[in-house]
Image (tube, rainbow, N blue to C red; front, side, top):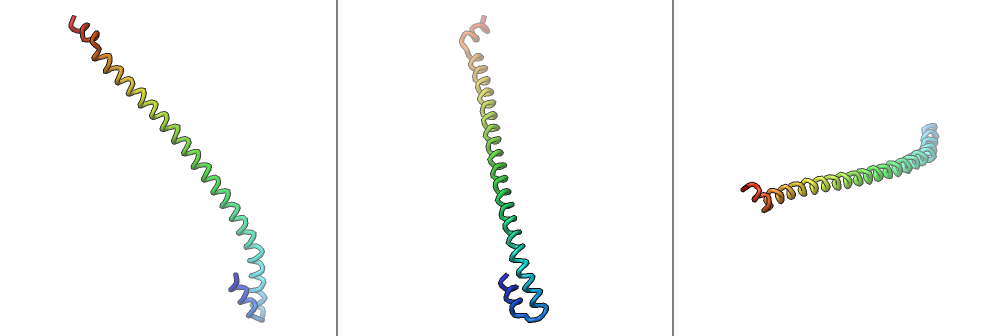
Length: 95
């Protein structure tokens, strides 16, 4: 931006006027575009953070459900083993 302004000041003919107008336009509209871009990036960053949080919560729920299922399976296996090795069960087989 500074180089464009310096070039516009150095040129004294029509090119200088064009460069000066271009520098003024860039300052005015470039700032507006920059501000909009900054605001848009802030919104995108917030949305990505929200999406990441939602994924983390879903991952935690999935981990809890998986852990509960594994607990139920393990309890079933241990109950089956306990039933299989019960003394009363082995006596019933011998009779």
